[in-house]
Amino acid sequence: MTALVGPERFVGGSFYRQDMTASVCVHGIPGQSLLKEGARKYGAADASRGAFIERAVARALEHWLSRRPDCAGLHLFHDLRGFRDVTGHGYDRRVSLGKANIDHVVLTGAQWLLIDSKGLGAGTLTTGPDCRGVLIQAAGASEPQRWMDSTTERAAAGILFRLTGLRGWPVWVLPDVTTLDFPGMRKARAFRAGGTISQISDIYSGSLDELLPVPQPPADPSHIAALARYVSAGTMPASGGS
Image 1 (cartoon, rainbow, N blue to C red):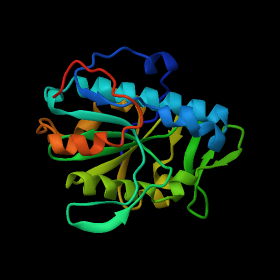
Image 2 (cartoon, rainbow, N blue to C red; image 1 turned 90 degrees about the vertical axis):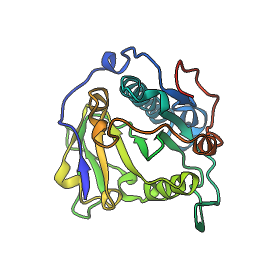
Image 3 (cartoon, helix red, strand yellow; image 1 turned 180 degrees about the horizontal axis):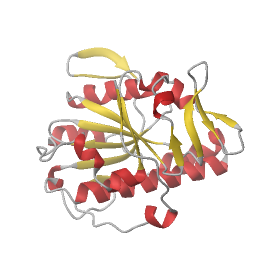
Image 4 (tube, rainbow, N blue to C red; image 1 turned 180 degrees about the vertical axis):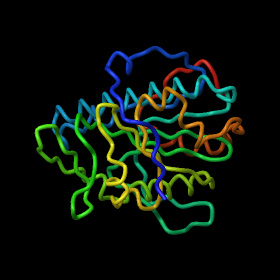
């Protein structure tokens, strides 16, 4: 069953840029893959918007995690890539993501959250008669959302299990200017195996505490090292963590 979090509301860019006090250990720089290579695949404008949203989601995640009493043991990873032929923890079948990356991972000693940022604009996110994802804009134009028709998140979840031996949960985070048609979205292939759909302002408000109850045990150093191998850019300095 797909869990859907957060009401529809508008949050402006100034909110997305609000300051936060970092005390959770952060690895990597959000949006780097899109800035470096996204223009060839998505076009310069879409790549720039996608990188902006990844940074906005990163700030929201850091804001949320840094205000938890267990933040010193939590690790947040941005822009992981290069997953090829991953095995481990009793699973010999190799899993790869090709050129796809993982936007964000929150890692604790008990579980992980796999977080995918989606840089959509204004409109209503739903599915069409064929159950394929679509963003319906105010003027009536429809923009296909192919990520809603894919099972990439399941492969990414399988990789995280192979690297850590822990179970977790996928989360998709969208801008607040995107209206979510929850009944329609439930029909999309991407969400049939479960997951949470949230918006950036919900992350700031701490809604993901429902998925990551306080307190969480500190992340295992071997699991941290296993994920850190796939960070696509340098580690951001942080004032806390181990």
